[in-house]
Length: 83
Image 1 (cartoon, rainbow, N blue to C red):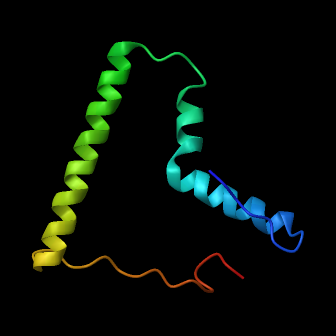
Image 2: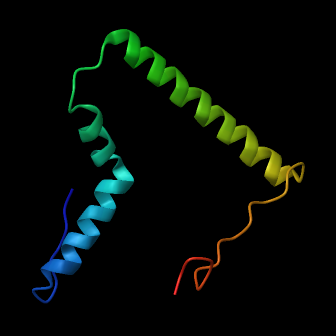
């Protein structure tokens, strides 16, 4: 992974690096590898992840075909609990 620092703006480069690492799943991987995971737990986790991915795929296809309503778009702004 490579990030270029432009105009000595290290803060912006760090922001870009963090976003790339987040997208690649580096932080999730580090968190998971912090402790030993038994092989049986690993299989159960991977199976659960596969089931979630499959459900998401089916849900997206149903939305494209019009069988399910599209998700509501989030509006950023002053909502409940915000000032």
